[in-house]
Length: 226
Image (tube, rainbow, N blue to C red; front, side, top):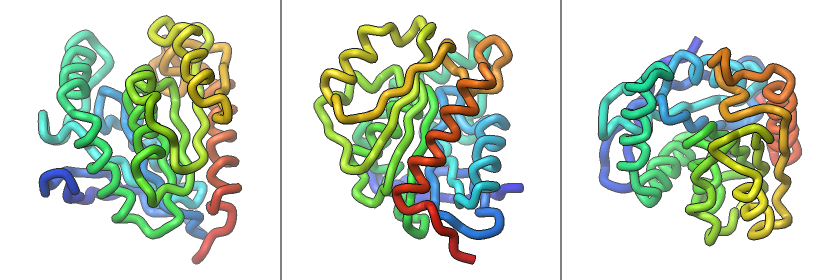
């Protein structure tokens, strides 16, 4: 359903790839979808296509292209190791400017959603990208690294109650630092919106998605233009 696209980073002029899913029917806005540590996988494309079906022109950039062009790994030991290495090698300053380039490439209103590493990147985008109308972050384990920054737009966060990588005290620290931000807790573990059978949880994934779409709708994405 989607197509390939190219973006130019505001950090250093680097050209990186993206998957672009055009809005289906009436366009509600643009959406920057930030991938997990596994890159732009088939699952990320499916997610992008799903948001496109709701009227969002969805762009899923390949943020690890500097390390490995077109990186898309399976969730095995090798994929986890490479994904963690690439994600840790991407500075938040660089990531923010890469997301800003994606935001600027889309016609407003523009939103962002991110998963895992992308959940923290969506928080970063909300704090540094002035062109965003709203953002939604799913199980962003590294958000605590960015708690000193305040979002410039509405944002909501989603966590699994049984996520061993994000214990309750981490979520509490986020809530204490930003008590005005809605944080939703689900009876699930990490990656509950992923395609991994061991992690996926249908009801939490659906509810978090509906809440995300509602957030976007009330912040400029409620009416579509042909």
